[in-house]
Image (cartoon, rainbow, N blue to C red; front, side):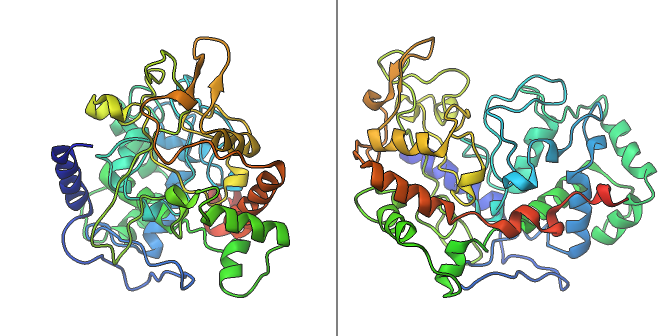
Length: 378
């Protein structure tokens, strides 16, 4: 990445998070283990229990989509760690998204959002993508139907008092800006830090011999997983309340090489879509591996069905697509990250690595009523 682009990106990060210290309401407290720092919260959208509850209701409400058919939760299902089990997801019109639905747990700590957009540096900005995007259409909110959607919310007796308590400084009726802030607050509240791995770090659980060997592989120089997934959140774009410098790397993992010169299929060409620089072709953000055992299918386009197949691809130093329009040897992609090289893991090492990755599943996240559908109870 060039110096000028890094400079623009750094400025965007600073502007996106705002100046000053993180804001926090008196009725909100983070409950985190010692190895997980508090996230950074925008000063203009402080956390509160009322706002999180409002955001939870909006997150599960199909009335927020243009035609009333889908909710945020349609593509982000709690029992799947807020993914949906599909390679691509249907939007409100039925047309599929271009990319795989990402997990939402611990998104409060992400430095950028979506798979490869360096300009999206806050959950509030990210929320505009599914709401207003038209390629692809997800929620399908437009200037033509926005007033109708807000009227649906205002007409429900549950919403007006919740909006007033969540935004006491706002004198007017519920507005789309409040909707976005409330959903962003709910997403920040979705914390995954109670896996067996987390409990192991706290001395509350023991890992098996296989899991321990897999952990050593993961954090060692043999498998080298930790270079892109070594933080407490198991990714490498992390920001928290004490962060001073934000790193935002993107990586080409050798998934495709459809022309022998490094091309990825349109429109999924990664960071290249923003920079038009050949070396950014196929560069995507490394997602968190927390709960990875339940978030398949995998990769930015959902093109690898199982976690075992993902491990195979990394062990091989990339993927070979042997037939069809995407045919090519991703192992030879000239833009592939230098971190992706043939490792040649043995079958036993692969089993151990998969065993360790299974310890990152947080059963509390998958079942906790704090993040469940509130409308089912009524």
